[in-house]
Image 1 (cartoon, helix red, strand yellow):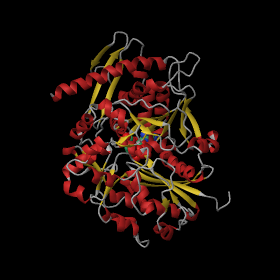
Image 2 (cartoon, rainbow, N blue to C red):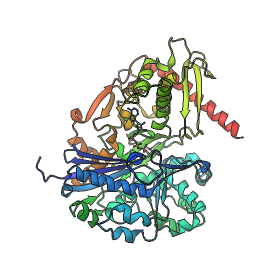
Image 3 (cartoon, protein in one colour):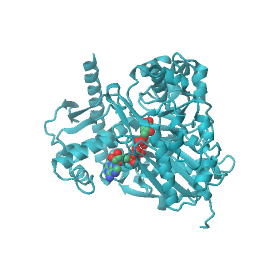
Image 4 (tube, rainbow, N blue to C red):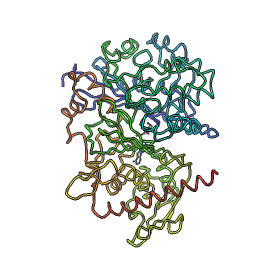
Length: 574
Ligand SMILES: Nc1ncnc2c1ncn2[C@@H]1O[C@H](COP(=O)(O)OP(=O)(O)O)[C@@H](O)[C@H]1O
Ligand SMILES: O=C(CO)[C@@H](O)[C@H](O)COP(=O)(O)O
C-alpha cells in the first residue's frame, strides 16, 4: 500500500492499561502500543491500575497516571516508526463511568500546551481533584437510593436512563462528590468522563460527552435524548442545576462528529498532520461492539478486568438487572449490557490458589487452572445422579447481583430442586477453576435468555455466534466452557486482535467518522471492508446438545442460589 494512505488511531484507556492501536482504511492493524499502569508507570502507588480506600469502599485512579500513560504510548508509537503525518482521525474508548474534575485553569492550560514538555509535566495542575472515581467503587449506596427514589423506583429510573442506580454510575458519584468535597465541586469548571477526557487532550479543550457513554451516568433520558431535569436537580445537591449543566456540557447526537483538529502540540511534538481530526471517544464497552459488524443475534463477552456481555439490538427493553445505552454510532440501535465487577481478578484468585496448592507456578500462569478446569466434569457431576456443584466467587462487592464480597458454595439436585449450602464433596481449590467459569457464564445465560431467539430447526434459544474479547479471550478452556453454557449455533469466535478489541473498535469509529459518505451507517461502511476469514477465528464449538440442556437445568439452581444468598445477606444486615 502506498506510504501516504490514511491511518487512524483508536486509544483504549481501560482499568489496567492504555493502548493505542493504528489501522489503515482497509481496517488492518499496523501498529499497537501499550502502557501497563502497574508495570510501566512511575510515581503512583497503584495496584491493578487503582487505589483503594477500603473504609469508605472507594476505588479511584490518579488522573496524572493517565497523562503519563498517553505520553508513553505516543512515544512508543513513534519508536515503532509510525508516520504521524498519515493519521487522519483519532478516536478512543475509556473505562466507563469514571469522572475527571477540571479546575478553573483547565481550558487555558489545554489551549496553551507547550510541545517542548510532556503532558504530565504541564497538565497535572489542570484538575480540581487529582483522582477519578473508578467503576469498581461502591461508596454511593445512599446516593443510589436517592436516584432510584427520584423517579419513583428503580424500574422507572431504568426506563428513563437505561439502568437502575449503580454505585459506579457518574450521577451518584457526582452527588457524593458534592457532599464530600463541596469546596472542590464549586471550584470545578467542567466534569469529563474518561472517554471525553481522552478526546479533550487531543483537542486542546474540554470535549463533549459521547452519545453512548453519557448513558452510563444515570442522568441521561434515553428516549427523550436529553438530561433528565429531575435527576440533574438531585445530582446538583445543594448547588445550582445550571452550574451542573454547565460542568457537564452539551451532548452531540452524532457519534462520528468532527470535534475539531488535533491541537498544534501534537503536530509539533509528534508530527501529526494539522488536519488530523478528533472523533468523539466512547466508553470501552460501546467501543468493543464496534470491533466487528455485530448482528443483533450475536453476543459478545468481554473478559477484561470486568466481565461484560454485550449485544446490539433495535429493541429498548430496560430492566433494573441490565443496562441499555444508546448505540455509539447508529441511531435507532441500542446496546444491551451486563457488567460484573468480579471478572478477571476473581478468576486470578482461583488461579493463584491452585498454583499455590500445587506448589507450581508455571511460566504460563493459567496452565494449571486451565488443566483442572477441563479435567473437571460439567458442574462437577461425575454421574448424572450426582448433585451439581455451583458457587459465587466475589472477592469484591458484586454488581450483578448487588452482593457484598464473599464466597459461597452449594450443591443443587436438579431432579428434586433441592439446594444446599455446603462444601461437602468440594475439592477446593481445584474444583473452583471450572466452578468460577461456570458461575460467571451461568449468570450471563440467566440474564440474557430473554434477548436470544431460536435459530430454527427446533433448536433452543441461543445466540448465532459468541465472540470472546478482552484479556481472557486467549484462554481456550474458558472458550470451550462458554460454548457449552451459552451455546451459539455457529460457534465461539475470537478476534485476531486478541485483547485489543476495544481499541480496534475505537479505531474503526475514527475510520467511519472520517471516511463515511453522507448518511452511511457504521455497519454499512465496516461491513463492506470487513474480511471475516482474516479477522476472526473459531476457537470452540458452540451449541452441543445434551450439555447445553444440562446447563439449562443448572440455570434454575443458579437463580435459586443467588436469591438465597441475597436473602441471607439482607437478613444479616437487618
Ligand atoms: N490466558 C488468560 N486466561 C485467563 N485470563 C487472562 C489470560 N490472560 C489475561 N487474562 C486476564 O485478562 C485481564 C485483563 O484484560 P484486559 O482486557 O487486557 O484488561 P482491561 O479490563 O484493563 O481492559 C486480566 O485481569 C487477566 O486476568
Ligand atoms: O463499569 C464497567 C461497565 O459498566 C466496566 O466494564 C468498565 O467500563 C471498565 O472496563 P474494563 O477496564 O474491564 O475494560
